[in-house]
Image (cartoon, rainbow, N blue to C red; front, side, top):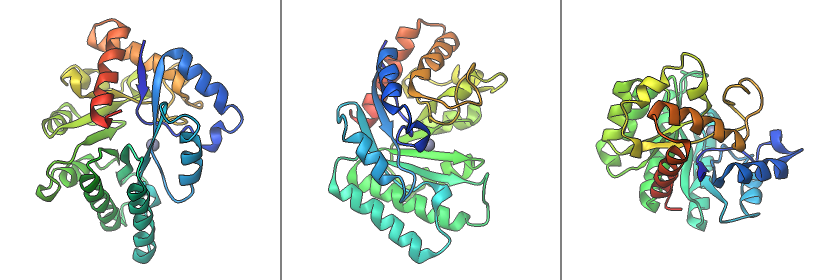
Length: 258
Ligand SMILES: [Zn+2]
C-alpha cells in the first residue's frame, strides 16, 4: 500500500507527546509522504521544524488560514507579506491553507476574500497548487477560484463536502477533491458524490488532529488512520484498497509535483 496524506497538521501541539510514534505508525501503514499546511503566524516554526526532520517525507505549504485573517487591514498586510516571504525563500510545495470560512464568521467576508485572492495570485506567481479550506462557503469559494484573473490556478478543495454538482464544477475547472475521515461517517452523503467523480481528481487526507474516521470519530486523528479512509474509498469505488491507494497517491504526486 502506498498512501499520501495530503493535509495533516502533525506539527500541532496535540502530537507533542508522541509525534515520533505517530510518524512510525504512519510509515507502517504505507504512508510515503505527508503534506503540512500552514495556519498562521504561530505555526510556521513548528511546521518548518517538523519538515526539516525528513525532506522527502514531509512537504510544507505557505499560507494564512481564513479563520486567522485579522480584522485590521494593516495586520492582514503583514501576515500576507509573511506568506510571500516564505514562498520567496523557496521549498514550499503549495500555498495553504487558504480559503473562506463562513461557519465561524460572516462579518469579515471581504477581508477573507482579499486574503484568499491575494494568496491565489501568489500561487500563480510561483506556479504552486493551492490547498483550499472552504466551510459553509463552497459557492463563494468556487466563485473566487474560477474568476477570470485567476485562470490557470490549480489545487485541491481540502475536506470536500459539497454536492455532486459542486464536485462536477470543481473538477471541470481542474481542482482536486480532498477526502478524509468524513467519508467514513454515517450519512455523510460523500460516498454517492464520489461515485460521480472521475477517480483522477480524488486525493486522500486526514486533516489530523481533526476529523478522525470511524471508529475513532470524535477522538484525535493521526496519519495512520488514512488506512481506514482508503478502505472506505475502495468500497465506494468497488476496487481493492491497494488500487485506491495507488490512484490517489498518483493524483497527489501529479498535483504537488512530489
Ligand atoms: Zn487544515
